[in-house]
Image 1 (tube, rainbow over the protein chains, first blue to last red):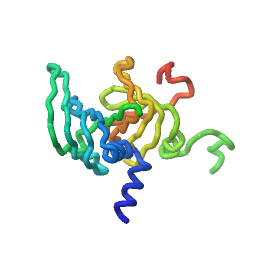
Image 2: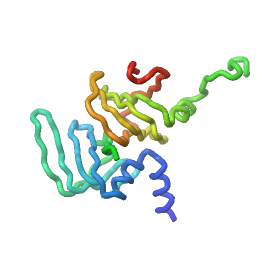
Image 3: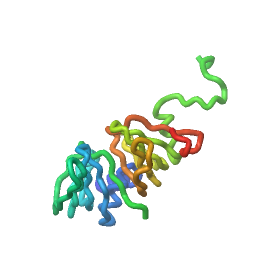
Image 4: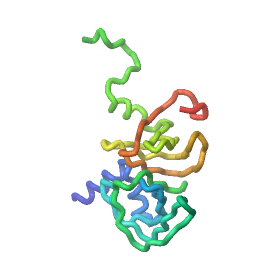
Length: 88
Length: 91
């Protein structure tokens, strides 16, 4: 019951963007406060935007263009600026 | 008491009324970093988290990227603006 209510809440509030990534196993692009980007799948999240991410490409351009692969990570929600989903 | 309000005026009473009124409309969201996101406001919550559709990212006034759905965490938001003019004319 509690889970159903929570899912309903997430479906009708801004967090549905994250819910869709969890449900459909689709990738999102996350811009972080540290000016790096994370491209990966959301395994789980909460209302603080804490997330468990899988198969993540971390991308940055300062001081040089670079990236690295992280197979699984916990991302603290405070670090999140924006989460982007590609057009359908 | 009612003397301060015009009958039938479009004045909204509180910030929450403004936020309700802009749901579904084109908006500009400026972040603390100075970046603008423009698109259709899908919804927002009590933390001022925002979901947008048809999102465009502008850096220093230049269109940098286009996305579908975007979620903006509320703590990053400097302001949300709507304009009766077309967005092409700027915020």
